[in-house]
Image (cartoon, rainbow, N blue to C red):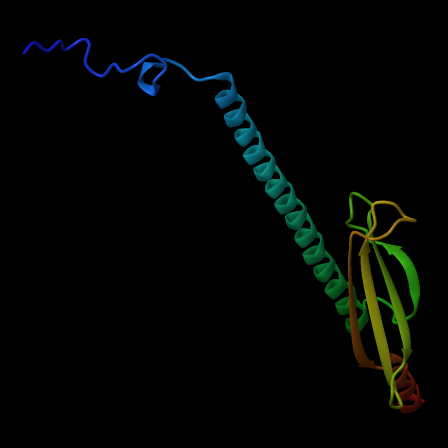
Amino acid sequence: MRTESGVRGRGCVGSVSDRRGLSLLEVLISVAVFMGAMTAIMFALSVGQRAEVSARLQSEAVLRCESVMGEIVAGAAEAVSSADNPFFDDETGTWYWTSEVTTGGASGLLQVSVTVEHRPDMDGEPNAAFRLIRYMRDPQLFLDAAIEGGG
């Protein structure tokens, strides 16, 4: 009963335990799986980055729109219709706002609609836009009342 420790585990020629490396087919399959996984990860990162930029632009459009509407309601900006007005604090020159002022449903009531758009090209489609509509009292009524009361 003699056993040799060095010979143990060896089987017939060509068995799995006899190989020392990977075959070319195994390497190609593993590289293909790796490349497929990397492609999927890069696509997911790209989609996430575009969604982040879109959300950031949309949030800025909301804030800019509320700012312009606040100026109009407070009387710092005139309540008149105007188009493609640039923002003075915009360093890139890609944000524009438009206001539409129409008569409201009742006497002395105005409907003010402010739209803010982010357009990289002046003639192109906006990347982000937000529209805010608000009803307010006609400021001309206060001026007319002040003139009548003072005169």
